Image 1 (cartoon, rainbow over the protein chains, first blue to last red):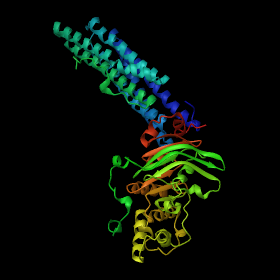
Image 2: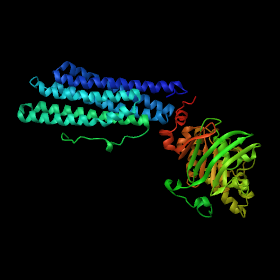
Image 3: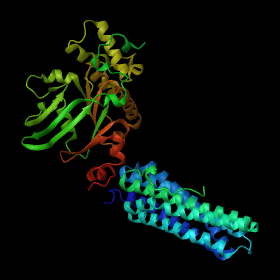
Image 4: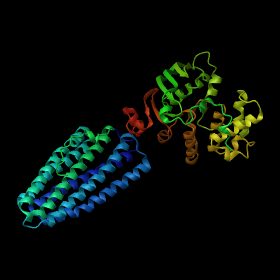
Length: 230
Length: 276
């Protein structure tokens, strides 16, 4: 798309997009690292993930501040209006993803050393497709690709299936050995956090699709896995 | 006391209170393939555009895009320009307004106009309003004329400000008041359609807000077409927006749609400030 006649307008929109991508980059590594911390019982890494969350919050505030100022001064229209709307909503979703990742990090610190590697692996396995979802949706944002956004939106089903399978796995561990119930409960919350992150990616995909096309993706048309894990 | 409720035979009043959906059902004015030439040079190209009753239609576009020229077709103001020729058909209530049987003076009483710069007559506030009803023979006596003057000024939101100084010259009012006086003058002859050619471009933001509030009020009774350079104004006051470029109608749609998801690239580039 051509630049605005007022070049500062283009610069301001670019700055918002750049800050959003920075936010996205930070939370993407937070997802992977928090689950890595669980998998390897690495408390230093877990603390490191927790310490990154304030920077995500600050970026969200910064994006919001820029958008409020831009709306007040430039009254964006059409694609510009849709892009600031999508950026504002996306920043909120990324902030939530940061919080959920931080929560996984906190729970990693609560797992005692006796928790088996098998139990720990499950969460790490699920983290991979979730972070790929986020990566894909940020890619759609960076390249303004509505098709990629729609693909992400349609594939949340895979994550739900991962969640359901992890849920059953944890229940099995807990039934077999009641001493694992404490750790199992934490794992279930972590799995739920990852599943929620998948939902946030789906939301971001909707905003990006709207930004690019001006059309809404209809939630009831999205494929959905049977939800056995709630 | 509001005199509007009593002796009103205004044909435009019959649908008062009609909701938006009803209001948009049939076009008050229907333009088919309208072209305008000035001394052989074409300024407007085959514009087909319906203008709906009891709603505001905004015409937007860069300078020289033909929006004002097109607006002037709707009450045959182009007739007054030497060398101007209008082709195509403009139907109002089923009648082609360009046909030789239509009296342009009568037409202009049905299709009022408000201009960019307030242009009150060099007469009193009262006579500015009374002039039209007098020459069109709309009143029997002074009492009836007084009622029309008051009603028109009330509808234009000016009555409270001028009721004690009706004998003072119209030009003694502020710019915003003068523009509302011109709107009152336009509605005094009971038009069906009001054309506005950049009515706020010489007004400050407060006076502009008053005119916009007035437009919103008037659209319950009239069909309004407004030419504006302010896209924010078009977005604020209109229900339908038409975008003109180089004499062509590029896109017309619901105002919400035009300003959030325009279909045409040229519309998008113009309203987002990318026009080269």
